[in-house]
Length: 261
Length: 299
Image (cartoon, rainbow over the protein chains, first blue to last red):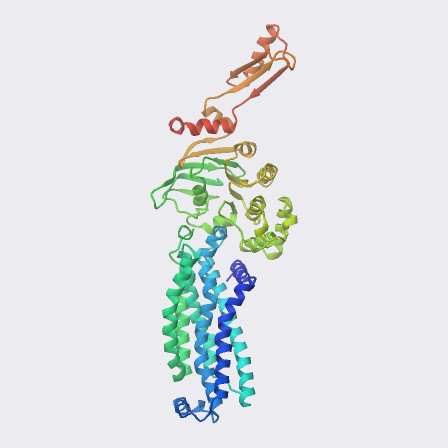
């Protein structure tokens, strides 16, 4: 990563953060998923009768160390450590998809792509700078959502049941390995779609069709994986990192200036 | 080493259109080369080929010995490009745009800022430096594009209609700047333009394109020779304000003028004024583009 690429990354990120409306729309869905929904869940469990047999039965399926004495704590723990991590596979991809989709085709539509291509940077370097810009934004939204979620959730649990729930070790693997790796894979593929697209609509359409099945498949698989073992999560994260690295290396190989303009 | 070399360069687009057809040109460093021709003549395609944006179908080209299709980044590092489609970011100010482009051309942010401020002053944009580009007029955008192309002190400038959309005064200033860059800093300029009057003022050599082919190239004198037109001399043998007594004659060269004046004085005429008029670039352009086939054969 050289300073020329950093300048492109900085410019791209600034292009999004300077647009207040765009930033708000980027943050709304993550906040709904990680703050509003958990709040509804916590309040519901607080207000409902605690002696529900079905719920007690459900909790017996959890690993022993997760079976808290208090049903409200157990449900909050279930929410925090088994459901919410799934959102963090989707949030970074969602957050970066607009920026990634507009990375090349957006510049093309504004007639700024040609100027950028006249820079003394290779296509691969420009491609990587675009990928990293969208990736960094996705990570920013992801960590911001995580921080807000944790503060709100812990406050709510403390207020409703007077206890404190600890985030599981899987959060470490999710936030630092799996989520960034999946985000990088998705961003790389979307930026590639953007480079081939003729219009923004074309790129966004491509991004949605490319990502939805992958995300749904991942979300389905990960629910089980998180229950099985954090180590499995570590393994999957490592595999995703490798895929991301290969994609980043190979993705731009066959592109030429002529194809982009 | 030539600044620019085109050797039988051809480009055929995937739709079969032959945009550039076996063009051969070479430019010495420091030349201001006027690349002239109507729309669709192949000028912009040639600029793109010389910057590695397009790959030649046939032939080759090089910029200071670097082949753009093989090492486009190296070509970009030593050249600045202004084209209609190479715009900057509307959401950034003029100064921020220049600093950004300076940085991606390898300057430090401090160097970029210093250079940007100097270019903004030179192009009379200092007052608009902190305005968003979206608020710039067409003329201001063009001047900022020129500043952007110069930000990294290029050895070669490709300018594709750099003064389109400019008022006559701004256009004149830009042309003076281009001439100054060539004369004082030795920058080679590859100028694609329709504005033949300005081209005649600043270019040292010309290439005339028509339908992808180079129909003529050379200095103004050489091009005059190509169309077979000499000079037209006008001699006034009466006081100013008198309609009669004006002699106009075509001559092959200015060597014939003293002889002509001598003949008139020997015949008892008084000479009040002698002026000559050579065919302008515009005259040559129209003469050559009107009959490209003939010209091609002659060349």
